[in-house]
Image (cartoon, helix red, strand yellow):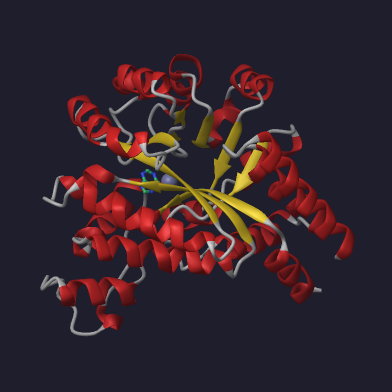
Length: 340
Ligand code: HPA
Ligand code: ZN
């Protein structure tokens, strides 16, 4: 019975909409990059690298920003992205909307060009594996709005080439509300970017931040945002707008020992376009998307029907074309018919 559900998940066509490429940096590549870039990370072997951290978002972020310091060259960003996309090709992930954090690298003296060119080359190569990827550039909310503006400007040549689909907002949330970036997001919208934004679970002002993201920024999708269930009117608004909401229950478990099961089940039961995602798998117990589906299904007592609906939500709330969405939804339906 258990193997059956695992097998079902392994073959289920799905999209991943909430994953940070830097959060997929596994210790083996981290070690290799440190060696070839001559960076001392205090590890003599791969097994000396420790991705554990204390409780909460800020503690996780410390480990996340420390790990990525080994990424310096275009090749590093290629290898990072390629390793993740290869895994997705073997996980029946057909489509990825991938976050990256340019300011976390440009602030260390790495050029924007090296970061985005390395990532983009791997995206192009992964198309041959059947994985289609779009890129979402996140602004670090604990950096200044001027820095976000500079990043938007630096991205222009690459947006013009069609390498970028959306902009997002991540990093430390306390005292860094969506409103701080209102004008940058308005400009991004006018340039044709899709908009999304993190509203991490259980932050100070979580509900206020969700409200700003939905009503002021007018995001096209919401990342995390599970505290929306505390405000029935706001939840009604999300449902009326039919907005996607990307949740990462196993990531929450690793940062806070709580999967936000009640909120996620409520969102699902109300018909919200909720999708299950990994967030930062190399820092969240090596839990890639199929493990997330399986572990959450066990916790929620979900079976194939619910997971098939989640997979459908992942496509309907993606930024794919109407035709592509239709084709992927048919793939899910055909798969369910053949495997029920
Ligand atoms: N929240 C905020 N910032 C992040 C996250 C997250 O889950 N992952 C990487 N940067
Ligand atoms: Zn995230």
